[in-house]
Image 1 (cartoon, rainbow, N blue to C red):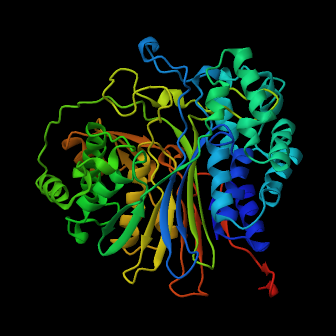
Image 2 (cartoon, one colour):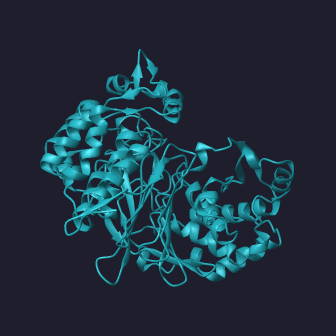
Image 3 (cartoon, rainbow, N blue to C red):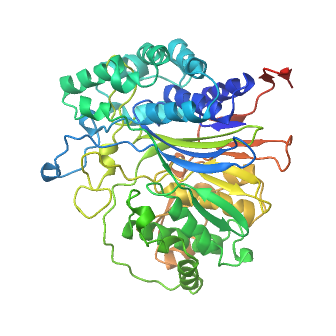
Length: 532
């Protein structure tokens, strides 16, 4: 099963499964394709984070691949600008998606890169249809697109392509074909890398040959393990935000399930207070992933913290916390995909170019959007783990998560875009499935909301009722209504795994974006030919 936010990308992953590839092969094919057909959210110019449940034999292994981007080495901390760089070629950090996906395929996949990239090259060369959502985003950001290349691909006579129009990306197709011919390392050490450096020098970018020669291979990290109502879970460790979601779930674990009646005023109040506390704690106690294993600072995820927070929430006691650190702005844009196969391999990839359409500028002659992760660092406090230093990793909110049944068998893999909203979005879905007994499809489609660290609440119009608003207002929250299926509130891509081998996979793609979930109609294997 494959679930992504783009129909074309999902079909790319499914075709790989039909050719006999495993879930890693399918996920990498879909991830590359998302950079072609969902360019507002990811691409070769961005970064990718991977949660992998790998079954090479009898004993499966669950691990996290930290594919963080890196700040250019020319950064001088003493000469930082007053405001974060968020647009233009100087706002981009070293792209890590090609290295992350390339490493993932080489290490855990079974098919060759040419087969994996074929769907992406086809979508770039022959074009894909612009969706209504992409038209709205292009229209919203149109004043920021000054590149001739962007204008030639996504605009016609100065106007954004309409929904249904076809976008052709010959430069990107050529770049992908070069990767097939020379391998993904060409992006850093070969002709593609040389063209990136030439582009940087021509337009005043910060990335140099030294940056690309230090290939940003993903760092394997130990997953963050926890549990909720008897279900074990594995999620993404720092620099991701899995610990935020763990604190949310551990706190809710101390609250009686009968109080979490879906869409009731009390349900929203309890979750809002839990969300706000966890997000505030994450900012007060930022973690450097390099030092994390040596730190005795796991207070966010221990039971004592959950008991203390839950007790306060139950009594609706307001408390004031002085913020010690100022986090980077939380307005990023991302995409997530989930994939699973019959061999037990399960993959969740959350990837991004940071804001919508990243730096709003494309790599000349190569056709991909540069990221603008220079906006995702701390520019003011040198004690912050995400302070902008040469080679530093940006702030991240990703939290791809795998839940296990009581017998230890995988239950479901899920993830979402949404910056700081990712952990609250996933917690809501998990709560609805486990506490409320809702089917995964309904839990993802159901009304959604978010309570941030500042006390601001975004709630979908379907649940914007007077009694809900009044109770949240009395608790000190400021409530704002969003659309019925708000783009702002994420896009969960999930796969529910069968209880027994040979059982049915259930894939769900969030209706808030453009994707679908689908499984292969048939699978070809070397020993059996075609198996239906």
